[in-house]
Image (cartoon, rainbow over the protein chains, first blue to last red):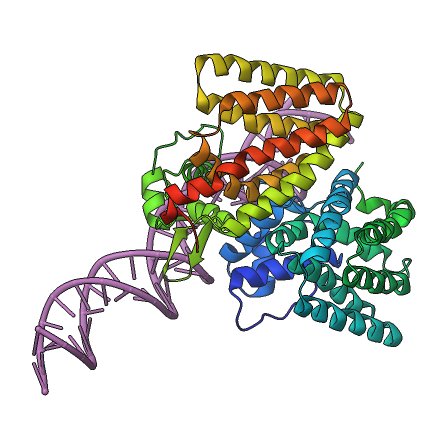
Length: 225
Length: 225
DNA sequence: GATAGAGTACTTGTATACAAGTTAAACATG
DNA sequence: CATGTTTAACTTGTATACAAGTACTCTATC
């Protein structure tokens, strides 16, 4: 487990949740790894209570499997859950980006402009992790522009399954294409061109679909079944 | 707060979650009511820990507002959250029912047949609460037929906001129409008729939209803004 | 009577103690 | 050597104690 520095403002519970979550997505906590409340509590320097609450929440999202009195484990990557996550994106992301076409105001557009520009900047300097964060943020901004922020929070949880595959595919999928997709999405939103938006979201998603089979072949021990 | 009997199998945490959730949806815990961990723990006969975990989870779903060191309150009905819930249903329910048209197998259909038949039976005997439960179950069965059960669990949380409005509208919306909608949906799934499915879901949802304004006028103290 | 302040009774957040159950290794026994 | 048993070290679930902060009430003071 990799160390995550605690922000002075956040509660112990939020800290534990963020730390565990990031470690799972980054695969520093590998799929199948055991994860004990006491162990994590000791590592993070907090008590069991906030750690337990964080683990319960991730258990609810099915990225941690909790077996009472036996132990808890980082869930193996379940292809059917990845598929559900992809299905949600394919339907909800499209509906939301279309809504954004209708009701996004200039400030929303401005924030997206800043975000995509930064992505293009970091593409030059080759900072993959920065682009990763900006990627998440870009999609959040679209949901915010469509006034669907609660749906985005909900989306985040199931997206964890997708995110682990994304982490594994970071080396193969070209950041160039991703940033290019985002630029095109932004321009389509500005033009209120829903048809193009829909096509772009579908193309964007298909990029990850291609290499899932390759990844599964490369890391079979991470996958369920 | 109304009493809910603890099932012998479930943990204290699950019991607390179910009890609080049912009380919020039924409006026995009114929007705006204060809800103390100690109070609930005493009422349910368990300790603070499982109650706290349940409240945290409902806080995550935004149906309970938690103010540290000050208290927790049942959230007022937030129209923008109800709108997000409706938006999710309009997009996801349609996509899922279309998927069900494609891949539902005979056992899935059979379960839905049973369910709708029961709805029609209880319509005769006028058991509104039975229909209420069967309604939830029917939609869950559609998600199960489309192999999207995790998405349904996710849907349930945000649907809590919608459910409270539904509880208020139970007296005005005719159960006859709801059960009729379900029967038509089932027939459309059997016929693999996606267009009809889409239209039915939209019509089904519109039934609740009509009376939200009336309800808001009748119970202004339950609503935010 | 109005007002400032101390105190008390709450709240949630966190830590810790105990309960119940699982697992695996050590060990005695055949 | 094989096998059944015991024991010890873990796990999560629950209860409780304590910490930190809020809000209201009662009281003293002007």
